[in-house]
Amino acid sequence: LDLDTFFVSVERVLNPELEGKAVVVGGRPGSRGVVTAASYEVRRFGVKSGMSLVEAGKLAPNAIFLPPRGDTYGEYAERVRDIARRYSPTVLVASIDEMFLDLSGCERLYGAPNDESEDLAIERAVLELTASIYDELGLPASAGLATSKTMSKVASNLAKPRGVMLVPAGVEAAVLSPLPVRS
Image 1 (tube, rainbow, N blue to C red):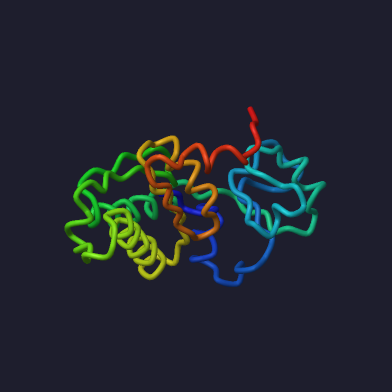
Image 2 (cartoon, helix red, strand yellow):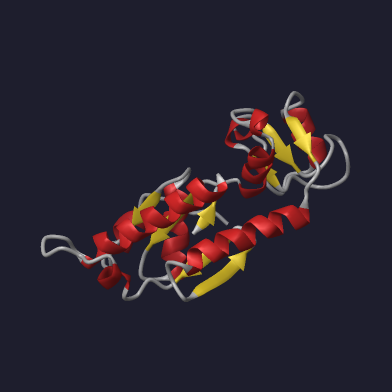
């Protein structure tokens, strides 16, 4: 599970006027430091996480630059984890905005009908989970369902923004083969 543009999304929950605008979280443009989060609207100008604020200020001088609020983001992250724990007893935190859930057995909870595969029952559970996060907290999330952590991370990236991607066992190579190799 990956919370889409998490810091920006929290800022938008706190200030809905930021919705749809180019937003950078990290500090003042031109100051020392790096971009900790960039909205999709500002990414089209080339701004991305980890970039210096000096460079971000040059690429998107009209963007809204905000200082980070670590404690606030931590509180929202914990609230997301609380929601995730309603769907799985195993929630492995990878970072403030990413986690892995073990959904083994979930298909029984969601009562896969005779004509539905176990994978689709789990996908339905994850769609409900991401909807709950959005409905309760206003935060968009993407998820990748796969048999390994690495493949689920790739799938969640491919599902962005606010999507869910299922990669059934045995089709991993077909999903990965068209993707560019990068370091």
